[in-house]
Length: 334
Image (tube, rainbow, N blue to C red; front, side, top):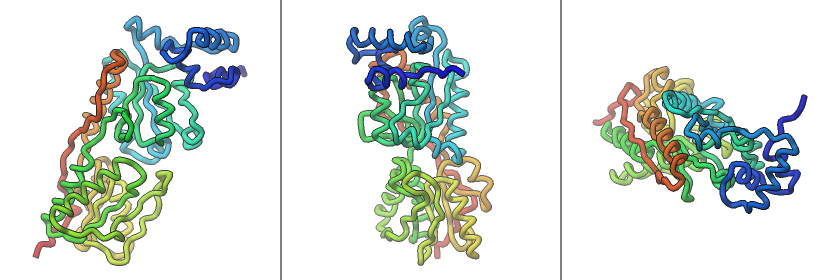
C-alpha cells in the first residue's frame, strides 16, 4: 500500500523544518519565494496531495477548523468530550467543518505537528486542554490562526477560559458561610492553569476571612503527566474539601465512604464543572457550573473571525458560570 506523503517527509528530504514546509505550501509569509518554489516542486515530485482548504477559504466556500486535544485529557475526561460535542454543534449551520485530532504524549514530547496541519487540512485551530510551552510555540510558528480553550499560556497566545478563580472563591465562601474553617484543596496545582486558578480562588476566600491554610491540606490528584493517582488523605482531616473538578470530588467521596466517613454529615465536599459526576454522586455535588455552551460559542466565533481577519485579536476571554447548591455540604455552624 502506497504511503501518504506528509509535510514531515518533505521537510526531511530537504533538511528543513516542518513549519517551513507548512508555510511554503499554504502560501503564508516567512519563506522566500525561491525556497517556496523548491518545496512545492519537491512536494509534487514526492506525490504530496494538496488539500483544497486554502483555496476554499479564498473563494468563500466551505473550509475546516481543527480541534486538537491531548489524549490525557480526552480518554477519561467527560468534560472535554462534552466541550467537543458543543463545538461541533456550534459549527452546524456555518460553512465550517470540525476535524478532531487527539495528540499523543509521544507526539507532544517529540514536537510532532498534528496531521491536520501537516496535511494542510485546516485553516484554523481550536486547542483544548493544557499543552506544553514548547508545543504551543511550535503551533504558533505555523502561523495558522488558533485559540486556546479552557487554559491559557503566559505568552501572547489568545484563550477562552471559565471563571476558575471566581468559581472556587464563591464555593469556598459558601463553605465558610456554612461554618467550615478547616478547608482542603484537592488538585495538582502545577498540572494545568485551570487547577492553579481554582486553588488561588480558594486561597483568596480563606485570606479574606483570615482563615489559615495548612500545607498538608493541599492534596495532589494527578501526576506530572496529568494522569490521575490515588488521593492520599491527610493525617488530620479537614471538615471540607474543595476539589478541582467533579470527577475528583466523586472519587474522593467514594474513598471517604470506604474509610467509614459520611458525606456531608462528617465531611463536606464540593466540585467544579457540573457535568455527569455531579449528579451521579451520592450525595449529589454542590459545584460550580461551567457554561460549556458559551465557551463553545465563544471559541467558534473567535476562530472564525481570526481566519477571516488575521489581525483580529481576542485576548483572554473569561466565561462566567454559577454555583449550584446540592447535597454534599453540611451546615456546621454552632
